[in-house]
View 1: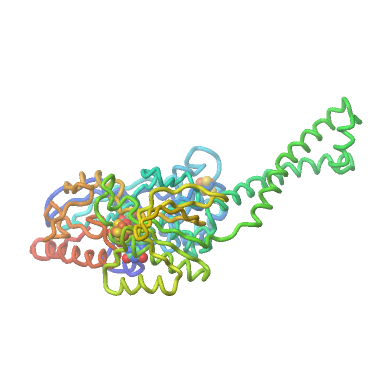
View 2: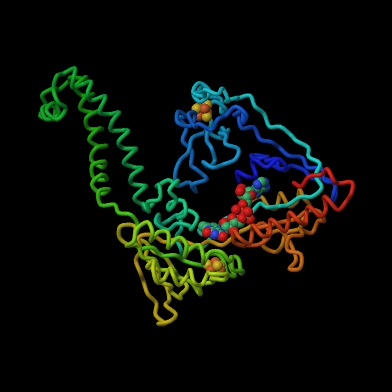
Length: 452
Ligand SMILES: Cc1cc2nc3c(=O)[nH]c(=O)nc-3n(C[C@H](O)[C@H](O)[C@H](O)COP(=O)(O)OP(=O)(O)OC[C@H]3O[C@@H](n4cnc5c(N)ncnc54)[C@H](O)[C@@H]3O)c2cc1C
Ligand code: SF4
Ligand code: SF4
């Protein structure tokens, strides 16, 4: 990515959207909307001082909503260009309220609330579509109770939990425990506020609240309005402190997840959704189980699948290594249902097809290997470009020309065309670039044209 950012022949138009495409192979006119960031890219140093001070917390899409970012943010630390962006959906100032804290904080004077979208017209010879894929929504399979049982997560959410730069800094803290920790944080804020009010009464009357309250209840201050207020505030404070203490006690027992279940083919090889194999999910489950074991050597993983598709050089060996050295058990069985046991532990009900028995097994966390679904917005983009989609809404190609779309001069690579892993996507990207170069350089009139 850094190389792309620095390459003299590549212009990166991040935070931009293709709005219109006209013309034909060798001679396309592409209209691009460069969305306003409300931050001057040339001035922003990416220091992050603005985000530290911004009061508006927003669910962090990069961390799959498992953490928060601020209304002024950098999508992820290694992003190119290294600039911050203001989210107009949440920024107080852009929503017409008073704020502007980021502008006051920014020493580079990069904040510009008056910035507007700009339209850019590009003359290009060829186009490569590389919009990738989206995660299949597992809540469409109600028996897996995704979003109902907090400790049932998708593989991509699990990757963010495993990541050192993720919301838990790589610790496998369970979502149910994190929800309680967030509740504790909220109650602590309330308790601090109510404690301040009580402190004022205590200073004024030179007495502790519990001592005063005992007398109040005995009827010592009947008719005293000020002391009635104090008693009310003290009671309200108690109502915050009781659940807070109980939750804190509970939090002392929290442990990182050690018993993991991976469920394969969630939405893939399933005629209700996608009949195809998504190709990469068997391997990413093995990878995630191996990394989890590296983080905590006592971690055990059960990978439930109809079969494990380890197709590729060294992949089968990797699978065996996981079994031999990383406490992974491969269970041949289709999971029928996930229910919630004690302590928010997910319980997996499955048929062990070797033993021909239906079994229940309890875990600390269940990870769903979701299907590779077409990227959101692909229909709109395909309509703009005039390319056809296949039966599942991936870009239509043929087996003999896997990077050619139905429009000459427009090519596709990676998961935009079909599910595939990173090495295959990279190989296809080279292939698509080569096909695009043929269009640009073979036509003599196109020597100066670019590829978009
Ligand atoms: C949990 C998980 C773990 C995985 N682990 C591995 C692994 O370890 N090894 C491996 O080989 N593969 C792994 N994969 C598969 C891997 O993610 C894909 O093979 C790879 O990301 C495909 O690359 P891509 O460039 O085609 O698509 P993507 O990575 O999806 O990139 C497409 C990009 O295009 C952008 N985009 C979409 N629409 C538009 C638009 N209209 N305009 C502009 N930009 C747009 C998207 O925001 C995205 O940044 C994993 C997949 C999952 C779900
Ligand atoms: S104006 Fe306020 S809310 Fe908006 S990004 Fe700046 S600090 Fe955040
Ligand atoms: S790669 Fe494995 S988990 Fe993914 S769809 Fe194929 S068989 Fe199922």
